Image 1 (spheres, one colour):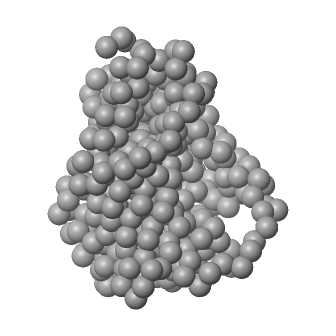
Image 2: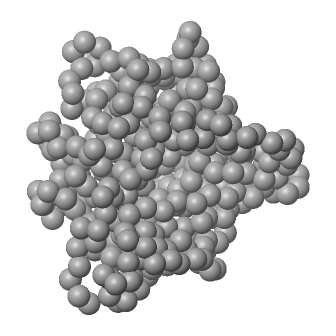
Length: 348
């Protein structure tokens, strides 16, 4: 297979190429809202990860789509990361995937067919791992490589987890370490060593399968997955939806060690700055917080971890469920009633 650097075709890779939160809000500001059927349990109103439509008393359908430009050069790794990221939205809503459709856009005059086949094979590999088929899809000829999935899942209506259902006093638990965007920036600069790349692939292809079991636990009130808007951005969606304030302790945030090293040296993605410009006014930082700490809060996570809001009494059960599937979660803070839906960072 020809040696192709996929990232040379992308202006911003992975979830870092998402439209900035403030720009997206402006685009959607005048979108007309029509009367929604009562069966639509989750729509656009709370910035949730997927739509959910109730079929009957026992079943609801989850529908989502996610796709992006290359974050790595290896085509199979790109396909695996994109598929893992797309299916994560289903787990974040509390469900399990049942099948997927491929979303494919490729510059056919620039990429050999063998490379494109490898990208699709990477997606197939992830879907096979969770036991679902890619049952079809759509492809177009475009200037930048784009790959992702439409994911269809199923969930019990009582187990659906919305951003708006977090409660006063809930603890916040994060399932994966932060720093994927920083590692991708180092990779583009040619600074990421093999061990750092291996860690990046291990994290971005680790499927958030605990989501379905977590949603069934008593005391788990809300879930989301941390992706392109960074930890602070996706936590803000829970705060706004639930009318709560989050307080997180920087010392408790799980970080990829190599990412912390790079961000302290000033390496970060452009998306991190765009995220801060979009919602930085809603983040309360202490005077002694350093710029690199801010960058980690806004770092776009491609295929990031589940963020869980649960009652303190359920904390041990949530940590145990993550642990059963090989995750190393961390309790990072709590939610409380406040005058405004903001995120406060504590730096010791």
